Length: 292
Image (tube, rainbow, N blue to C red; front, side, top):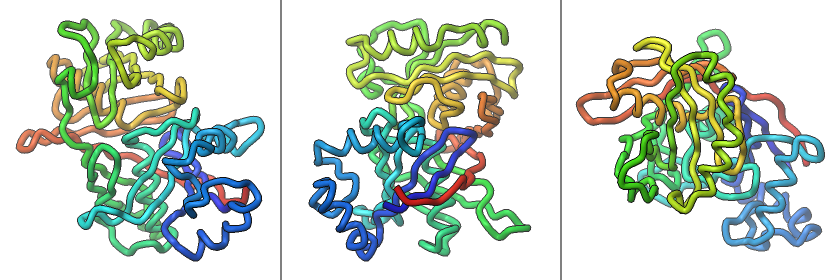
């Protein structure tokens, strides 16, 4: 199986090209030998063996190592250019990923799948628009701007079964629970693993939840850490950064444009007051290519 490994701010993904029928035929030997995914898709949503294979791929000691696996697929929606099929490191499916979709945008352009720099990507959270920004020196994609859609604070839509909840719950296509702290020291010492694990198992979050601890440094800068369902603590999370920005804006803690700083780096979040959409801009980089 051929793969490309990429990352957005250290949030890393194994990219598998599932757009070309010829590649599926090329993998027929692997499919036959492993007995995996007779449908032709290497990682099939309906195949019960897929989660185990994803876990093997993402294992940092016995596999390739990653926070997740992204299959680049042909779009099923007539208005989309490609489809993103996303798996967490534990083999579970995820609806949306801000860092992952930027990696997909860079992947399809740099690998000759498209000549477009404005793309529509189909995800399980809906279609997302991407603007690919070229590096003038290399003519490759360096930055990607994503229309992340409208933050949703309605508990039933997140989903979160809370009528009143002190932390801010918001959906960015997937569920988030944002917890604000008062200082950088409090952020660094925050027991994110404990709280992320605890909140993710509550019946109030029937589909689990991503948990963010955030400190508003000033109206233009926020620092955060993130616990992602199915992955644990990661270097960065695009939807999490948008959730933190949306929560801070809702509580008037920051302006309409804010930099979100995470252990892996910084993302720029901008709010479009006309349509209520958040836009995320950040880098995407290729790490390596190989065969598994």
